Image 1 (tube, rainbow, N blue to C red):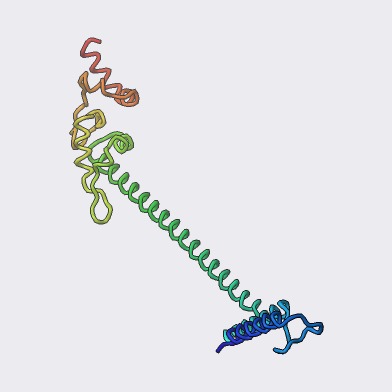
Image 2: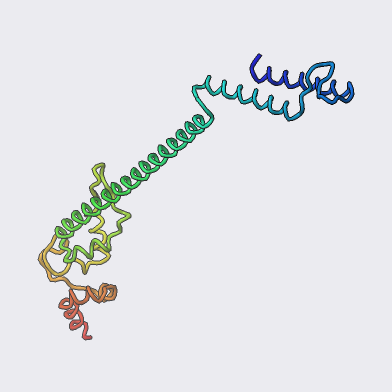
Length: 212
């Protein structure tokens, strides 16, 4: 039987004594034929003392000297757990940020490789303004190999030149071998003001020939 159970049993016995004393009649000295009578306050104090002893015994069994020691350990454990979670969250945030930076760096390298490739292919095809070709080219149509290098830009540029032949200018190239570039009315109408300025001589010749 545990200390708590013993204390409880003792309290019940004392309560029975109090009841028996009350039934036996009044007495001036607080005693009765059944023995000493205990007041309710005395019984409460006895029960509290027994409970305190049982609590102390349990704490010692768990390795604590007092309730405050147990509370301190629980508090330290909680604070340590919160600190560990905080460090984990910080590490996760750093990992996400690093992932974003790596993705941005890879995208930048991809764009630079695409620009370099289009510039080289544009020069090969005689395009006078590689920057314009890069801007006009449909980036979504570009295909890349396993190394991230574009592999179909030349074919896309050739197709674009068929739609915008004025990009080839008037020089010699694979698309325009040594001939002066001439334009049709439809081609001129599709030109931007910038393209018209760049190819003004050829456009002027067209206007003179057409009598305008």
